Image 1 (spheres, rainbow, N blue to C red):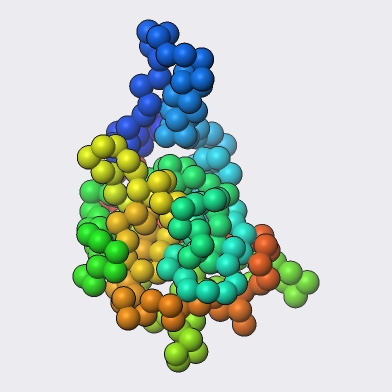
Image 2: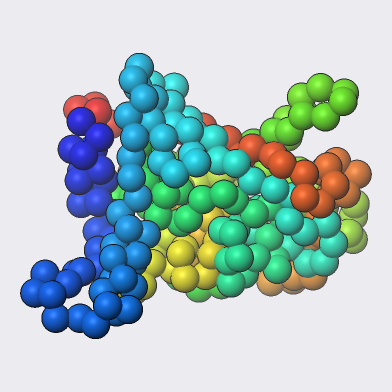
Length: 247
């Protein structure tokens, strides 16, 4: 069952898998790199029963149409453009949180809960002012401390230092990121999963985005977020109804 689901997901995303070394012609080091690349692009999906799956460290509830990603508070100062980046991601210096997941794992989790890349209208470039289109989701950041459980909408993770206010009510939209003609999956190469600004690399972004004039003014909401290094969970909940006939 898990193999069947993974095969279907890979067809949907059209993400290229490494060719590997079918003829056994590559040197040992190159062969290992090819295998590692193939494993990265084809994350394992473990079926847990009852409509639940695990993709890497991501816990997926397919029936409830939500998944949870482990993360840590990554930045507590400086300009922010992204909510969630991959571990060591290229643009992590502008991301409030860092995920315990690759972009491939994150996107497979999105597909498992029924988000559809065919309905996505992606940003064309960084700070694209046009609204994006696609399936709506809720994105929450959850953590526990001595006072109990805390839950915020990811939009509250930053404040505009000009006004001291959090971001407005623009919904979160699944866009699926961008696959370039040479087969590069931008979410993985740039290391970004969820963004406040519009960027072709993100998998989830705000419908309205934030403008170029906002650059440098969105900073971590230190009054609300826990300290740097605190473990949190990012929860993604599908809101758009699945089309009839899709499982």
